[in-house]
Image (cartoon, rainbow, N blue to C red; front, side, top):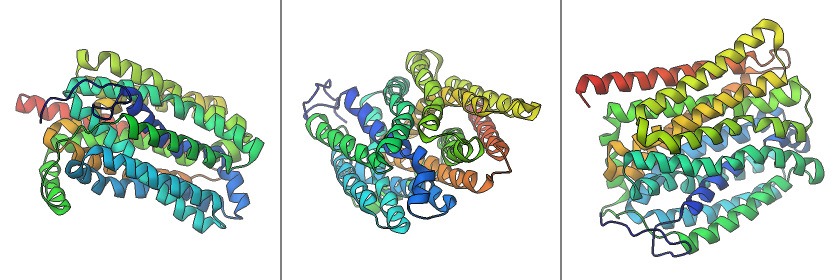
Length: 404
């Protein structure tokens, strides 16, 4: 592939500016969690059981995962820019459908359709890999996700305030506004970064075995999926813990809900600052260790009889810190196994990550009850995070054996 020119802001003939890439991912993060403080109220509005309403998280993640399987190869074939533009256009239509839904089943249908925004989130990572070599890509991904981490940190708090002031639909109108703004920005700023491949989509998908037969690819996928899985478990279970177990108001829960993003912000900064110096594997191991230790300490405090909403949400900061360190490096590792398949790797790796997250999010929602407390959720998160640490240790061991 020819060397790409330096990005020039609002010039569609050059690669996208880091601000554009950051906002592409931020819009997806907003869609994922801005409405979570409204889930109990939405269940009441639609006269639906909370567990059915909670599927708006799990089903969204499941469709998100399925779409990434085809979006990656499509972007390798037709380019990153058109995939992202279409993703945001369809996302806006789906969001309007959520606002106008007459019942919970129609709402869930349009909520699943909102997952099309994954085209922006997944392909923006591939665009970074198009522009930069592996260690530098990990550093840039750290900075991109550091910028977007402000959104999931603030979004639940904003969502809780909007819910109390204007009702749950306000949380979807804000998605319309941001989605339209990012669509315009992508149109103006994002030049193509991928070398387009010939052949059909079927030919592109046939290249998946080249990735699937790579143990290194699977190791990085497992480390990312299991670490992120602890966070997705949190997304599925924390609204129940806050509203039902600790009886928190939506605005208050929104503020507490952003706790992992505080850690995520600093983790992304650390990743951007030190990934090149320390290398991918050591950064992934460090991130997995931080998250696992923090979650285990939370569980210990609960069993010691000191559990509370402050302990529960406070110990989610190390979870965010560990993910902020681990995910940019694990993603860069996935995309670097077969650089000529960066889009396919982004799509397939993202599908594995989000698919696992959907399963864990749904599991978290079904495990919890008013009498269970937060214990089932904490055990699920500790197990997922600990397995992430095991995955990267196996990658390191294999690479040492092969002399890589």
